[in-house]
Length: 211
Image (tube, one colour):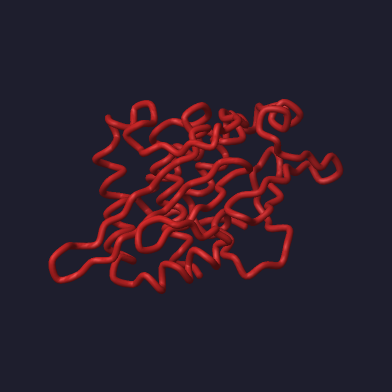
């Protein structure tokens, strides 16, 4: 499925940069590094992303979902998701987690990009759902997220195999505005840049609006 980019094309330039690297990649090396599966007959990678398995063709990066599900197809609906996934396939790798979760400030370079993260992710989450906790819970569950004991409502969601993000939300009242916290399994720090984590959260919040 093809995505039509907006006229400003802020997603197109980085996507095309990574597409060039993707087209030069060795599929077997990609699979060994990322855990993706390779389908020789159809020249496709099989990769789970936000709870949905996708077949991603090589070398043109055309995408199709492989299963029937009620979950939104973020990779075919959100252009930023394509950039995140193609970067994962070309540059990132699988890494083990100790089970610890990190704040964004604790991720390498997170302090540098914290203002961007706070506006695009924390504030967006808080003001989109802080006064609609039920809608937040419904959206998270439709994405396949797992409920956790955190905040007034909390969920963790698997982005790629073994990479988890926790969304914690506190509802607002007459005295205090709504607030949010987002935590990342510590293996993100070994495989992704701080900017990628902003994009990942952006994509998830966008996917919540598709349910």
